[in-house]
Length: 195
Ligand code: GRF
Image (cartoon, rainbow, N blue to C red; front, top):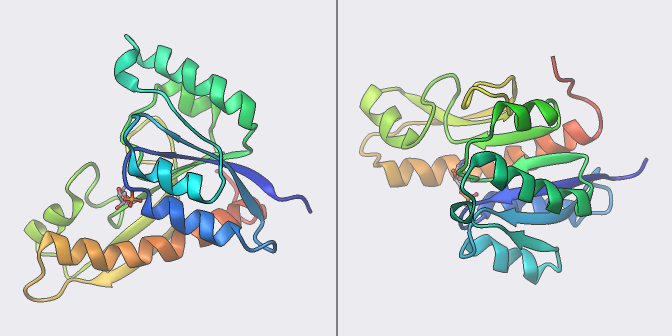
């Protein structure tokens, strides 16, 4: 079976991107990373991807007067890379409903909370404020509603006495790096279907 083509979209350091790239170095992994795209020129993950000889591109969203204009530019890059799937890894832009519909069932995201709890930003602060005893991360399909798409996989971590947003983020991140490659592999093998 041929390996599925995956484009990764980032905005920052790209540690989840690196976890996907590392997993895909195994020839038995069912997906290959065909490109890494960022919505800003200084996303640190771009340099990391280049060290793996993976094609990179960026388009600064601020250079485009509209969300649609930016998405057309992204679309041109994707036409070159011809991905079967898109994996968002710390990508901090919201898509138009048209773009998410075009990629329905083919675009996934990792979110640092146990969705549907703690959507949006500052999820670790939210979890501590709520006093939950368990926190975690979620891989889900991307749909027009932010952090609302069907869930593919989750991992749980305990919230420990004395936790700060930083200690909790570190504990969750270990699980993010574990489940994102697993979830992408399941998708690429056709083991997950979009409802
Ligand atoms: C991760 O916690 C991810 O879940 C969230 O933003 C963070 C990005 O980290 N969406 P990185 O760029 O993958 O290191």
